[in-house]
Length: 157
Image (cartoon, rainbow, N blue to C red; front, side, top):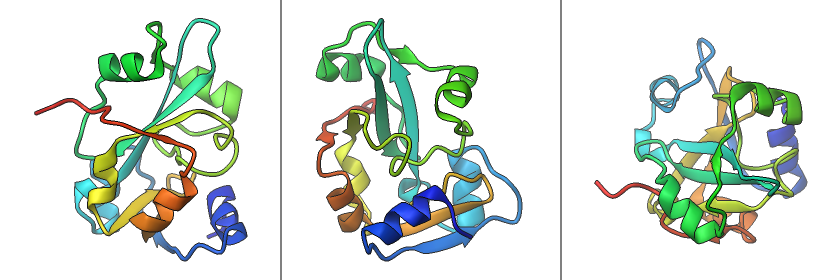
């Protein structure tokens, strides 16, 4: 399966493995089950926007929850709120539940990554298609996201 995400990884010569699903999935839990990985290896991507500000990409492990207050403080935008499904589909042409944190069209946006993503040796991201995920080394993922702000953006349990 080829997608914009796999094309992006190919352009960077990053090794990856496509993990096809037997059915389309739209949650981290479903993705972990279909890919046969731990929920902590799933990378979820969320889009937020503030009043007149840029769209912000939040990247965190599948077993954690975003702490919007922390992200607002770190980003300096107190008006951040989650983008709704219609906005994401209209503005970016992306499928909610299958957002990839890398590649077009999000690669020019500010990205905030929770450091616990890198606790796993291998992680899986969305291929951009709800029918498959992509597995790669977390060190390669870190190199791809070299311009991202790495900060604790998840809720403390």
